[in-house]
Image (cartoon, rainbow, N blue to C red; front, side):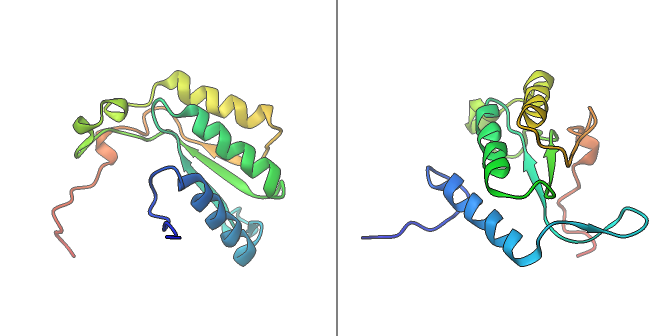
Length: 137
């Protein structure tokens, strides 16, 4: 039997990603903040919501609710912006619609999750994309 690796794609992605999340939690635990509210250690799960894949995002949130303590934070990112070779993949060659992102945020609260962050509208602006010219490297 050939064991598939976890490469961040394909049908095995959810299993691999959730396994990695559990291992990260095992290593660092819940977030600990200093007196100024800055995190000193602990797990904050950053999740990028992709266009057309809100059900996948909901599945991830359900996993978090069922498998991790309530003290873990989730950062729901709505900053997806199509670039590079996305023209080859019509399903993701578009920005994330505001409605899809808001639906995932609503689901976060429906599940009873409390600790988290959401990005402000406009986080998908091209002004946030760095120049990849390797200058300064």
